[in-house]
Image (cartoon, rainbow, N blue to C red):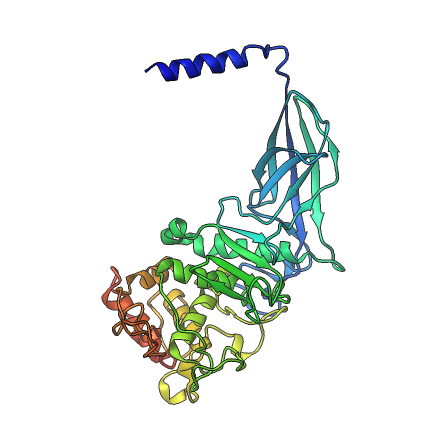
Length: 419
């Protein structure tokens, strides 16, 4: 019992020579607003029915808030003296603190880290993207408003800040609606931008086991098909951690690499379901369930053409193209019909389930390697034995028999070419 007392007295003795007068404390507040030049595609154009759309053409090529990002205050010498975050309007108000010495000039910066640690952007080599203001003069004991600071322009849009906006849209509008994601989707590292570093994955890719995403060199302005889609893969893994067989895109050949891909490329069903699921989650970040004309695409512009329509159903099966049930687009349309409340032209859609229920269905897959179980594509020795396992049919089965709500979406599968 003597040791703690001795340590306390020693600490007091060390601290004693510093008088109250010597302990100079300097404090104040810095406020302002951060914006960026919006250059992402996938907006809803004014020529289309945009009811239920969350990203409109009127926002495209305008300055928009840098939302929910961590913000830092540092002295002109680089010493960190305060931190906080922006709100949904890009506004921030941060208290700063200096002890003993006072540097009267400072700057504000952000790095693409979400305020609640959901994700953070890094360079391909693991470095930091840093966007900082010019130096300004602090107000000791007062507040300095640095006004609105804009990043980017029509001739020089900022790639990372645009991709960050896509990521924050995905989190705020889609994934955060799930308690399972609130608990499990954390500290995802997003490497931007390279097709070969830190991994050689061709286009963009995601790893649930590593908890990271790599965005390719052309990904910045394709939010639905790139950063939001890859976050959908992480969400899928976080809802139901499992392994996936590789090189599943080149149906009917496997394993094979180097084949081309599109929303209408036939795939093994374990892949077409996973790709469609990740894209559905990203689409639901840009469109509410009551949207009359929701779209999906891999484009830097507005999504156009028949193959971008997620509210189009082709069923019954007599109307389906060969292997249409293996398309990622077919899974997207099926899951959208589970989510939305808009009737298709050829049938009544009255299922209408929330985003979180679709995510919870993934968690309802039982552990194991058998039919309808989450590691179904493998046998118990982890050899691939069913590349069509963990498909849209398995989703339907678990949604009906293992989800607590017992959701029956059979008619939706039937009218979407049986994904």
